[in-house]
Length: 342
Ligand code: TXA
Ligand code: MG
Image (cartoon, rainbow, N blue to C red; front, side):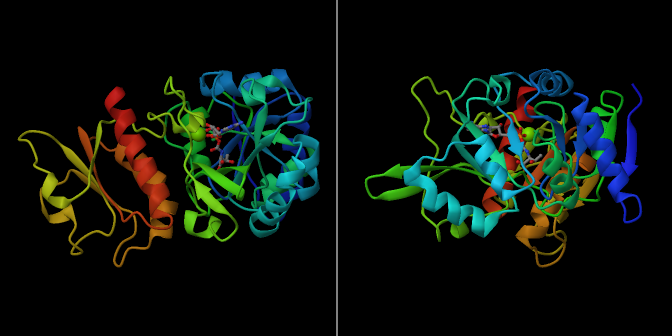
């Protein structure tokens, strides 16, 4: 299949959106930009189209998808908000939507089981990217990240082409993603002491922000070690090249004859590993002072470049675990764990 790559710029923006909507209404899948990472979308109410997402991504069917809507009011066509959670959900929606926050709530009965992997809850978000917004306004879509399962999430249309080119009819190029990390996922729950937010995946909206709305609690692990948010599977976001994460510079001792690539946070000077060895390839996430938000935006881009460089092992430096740094470290740990499994 030929994959059509179209740029959504000022002049033909509407046409491009109309073309994507027509494909979706026809039961096709389309890759679209969001402010976090690119998504692979299908009409949420068309189970067969949603099945195509799993097929194209080679994604196991136990991993549920996120539904994207284009109006706040469409929340009500996808979920049943328990009355006791209405207030906290209203506040989250008013504060963060449109934006990189996904809510997990009880689903309406007409949401196909394939979207939620049979769970009675559904993940839902309202992206702030104009293209995703315009498309989802016409057709609410289920859309996971537009990468092959377990691989690095795409933060540009070119990255989507590398992942899925030839397998899908259309990719809309809406530019580089503003946040570069997948959305923060929370499940609002009621307790005796009031509402709490169960943090299922860290992301661009840090815990410190969410805490202003309600107490934030950890995801629960059940006895069989079955994890509540399957996005927590360790091997997510992994490069094909083996990767190690070093918490401190002193930890790394290079071996003779191995070609190393470095993922540095701040680059030269700055106490980094940059001078420690002769790197075959280096990528710097936020050169100079180091800004965590910039690190988040560039993380997957840098990892992709390292994976494409001809190195034997990728060495990644840790960042401080505050704010967006929590989400960056989460992705780095999974990338390292996943690369070891390959
Ligand atoms: O930023 C994002 O969220 C991107 C863009 C495309 O919107 N999407 C994304 O989707 O990251 P995906 O499929 O790569 O990750 C979705 C994750 C699942 O792996 C799972 O952890 C969680 O969302 N999820 C979905 N439905 C859930 C549910 N009912 N309960 C708990 N977790 C759920
Ligand atoms: Mg993903």
